[in-house]
Image (tube, rainbow, N blue to C red):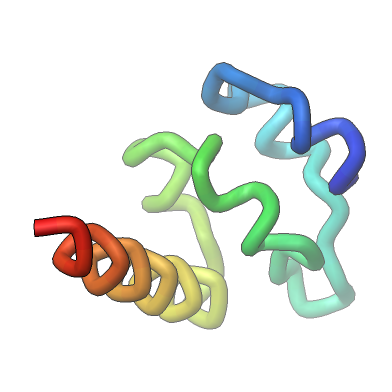
Amino acid sequence: MTNYLSTRTKNFTMAEFRAIPRNSDGDIIDLFDAYPFITGMQRLLLTGDDWSRMDEYDEEVRCMMEEFY
């Protein structure tokens, strides 16, 4: 998945979002790599663990952005 995402420029379609590899609990395996391409609507479909990890990534991005201001 990482090789494919390294050249991606657009958000996931719903079909692509559903096809993302997941573990037995339904969590996205490579969420960090998929993070930039998940839409707001798709976020609503994430498991609780993935939802929390997305929030953590959002916070990391906010912190990195503050370093540039």
